[in-house]
Amino acid sequence: MKKFEEKTTKTTPIYDGKIVKLQVDDVTLPNGNVAKREIIKHPGAVAVIAVTDEGKLVLVEQYRKALERSIVEIPAGKLEPGEEPIVTARRELEEETGYGAQSLTYLQAFATSPGFADEIIHLFVAKDLYTIENKANLDEDEFVELVEVSLEEAGQMVADERIYDAKTAFAVLWLAAQ
Image (tube, rainbow, N blue to C red; front, side, top):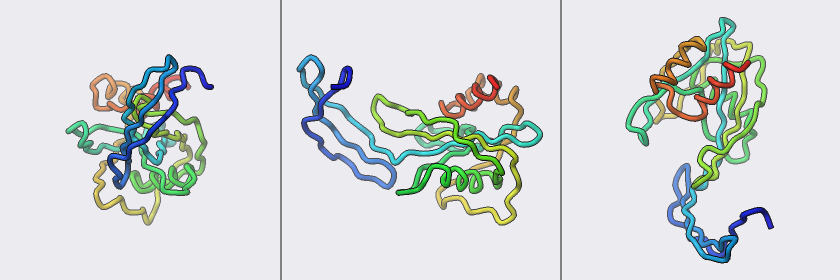
């Protein structure tokens, strides 16, 4: 048994959407008590820390309905079924920014909201960027604006809460530590 493991005794599907699924699990706790856990199942995603030859961090600004506002983020997107994360990373970088990368290096993966979701983001670092001549189209429901900023400007955007999501704040901290 894993430390503090909660044994699932029943799973009730609640919603099966285009991106996420919601289920409620009945679990037995380590002390023998019973509890319910609401869980979001997500296919996973990638995010890309892209830096230009001039040292600018490549970001995109987009509206996030869950927050009811626009925020500035590193390029990111969800994994398609059976797709390798590096393939997704290349596609999302191209679609959202118009850049390709000669060098795309896997950095690490992390859970975004482990208290209620199983989403894992695979983080890549893109260097030696080049402009894509025939850029891939964004998804039909996706509207983004390219933003390129210095590390100092990105740090100020975190302080001003224009950068407000964990993956992008992590990217800024990671770059600052390099």
